[in-house]
Image (cartoon, rainbow, N blue to C red):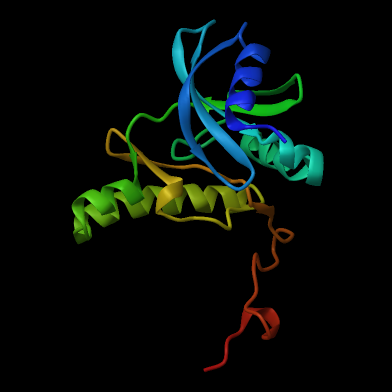
Length: 185
C-alpha cells in the first residue's frame, strides 16, 4: 500500500519533465487533484490523478470513461480537459486551474445567496448541463463543490460519475417505479 507522500513523490518524479507539482487541491473517492505548474506553457493547471491503489484493485475503466467524457465537452461553463496520459503507474488528466472558490465555499463564507446572485450562478450552470445532455452526458453529481467560481463566473467540473444518457429522443432518466418517467400524483 502506498502512502500519500510516496504517491506524491513518485508522481512528481514521473511527470517532472512537464509539471512542477505545488500542492494537493483535494481528494475524491477515486482521484486526487494537484495544483501544478505547466513547465512548457508557464501556467498553473490542475492535474487529476487516479489513486494507484484503486487502479490496482478495481481497475481504471471508470477513470478512463471520465477522461473520455471530459474530452468531449467544450463549453464556456465546463472545465475542459487539456491533455491526459499515463506516467509510470499513474493515469491522469490535466485541466485549467480555476482560481477562485467553489459554490460551497461561497455559501459557507456568505450564507444564503440572494435571488439575483443565485440566478447569476444558476443560469450558466443550467446552460452547461443542458449542453452536456445534448452531447449525451448526464452529470449525476452536481453539487456546490462541483461548481467553481472563477472571477464570479461559474464553471462545472467533476464528471467522474457521469454516464452516457439514453438515446436521443428518449428520456434521459426515469422516476423509479413509474414507466416513461410519470410520477404518482
